[in-house]
Length: 287
Image 1 (cartoon, rainbow, N blue to C red):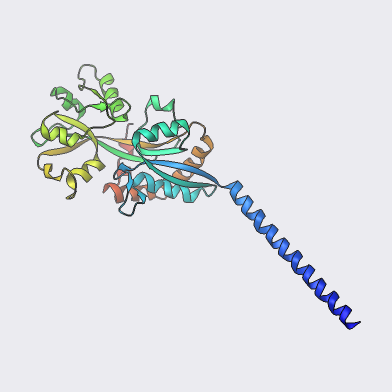
Image 2 (image 1 turned 135 degrees about the vertical axis):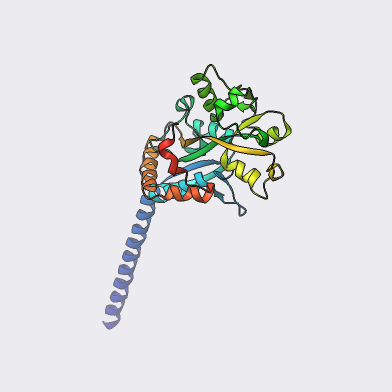
């Protein structure tokens, strides 16, 4: 009799253990499924050769102003998981338009043409200094009007580069004093080298790359530091480019970036990567 009771107790204990284990496994599975359902993985393309806006650091990790802002955005919207894809500027534009990537960052300026291909969110990503690179003896050329008035030649700019649009907009607003604008075949040319060699009188460039290529001691054109100068003519808003089907994602981005701006984190990142707080001149930005 005692043996029968003992066997019943053992059987009951085994059954309870099995049931509890089954319940625990069920709960874990449910939690995993919920996480997979709730979190949407998105591909964030970045121009990996656009220092200091975006590039691969010495450890092979994506970084730069644009990338670091997007990393902060990722932290604020847990319903999305970002995967960063380094690529070229041209592939980024094509890839985002076709849906290969959900969003791309490349120090992009707004253009009317791009609004037909991409979603521009409500909140801009950052600010970029655009300037003229000219020889030292022409450092008195400060503005596009000065450049045009001097009759100077400009380094070619690819028509799909937003810098081309900036010059074209100036020309349309100033038909009596136009800059000689030539569309190039490549997305960009080595402006500093062309100016230094005298192939053109000047070229349009972003301040960050000029600092890295010319001012930095390890820059590829540091030897030209006494030959060329950079004169800022505008500070321009930059934007992430979202695929046309990603309006919900763009809306989530807007809320996150607005918070980052309120907390001045974007200001801090411009100082870190550009050496100055570009947001201080935001009230003067016209584009």
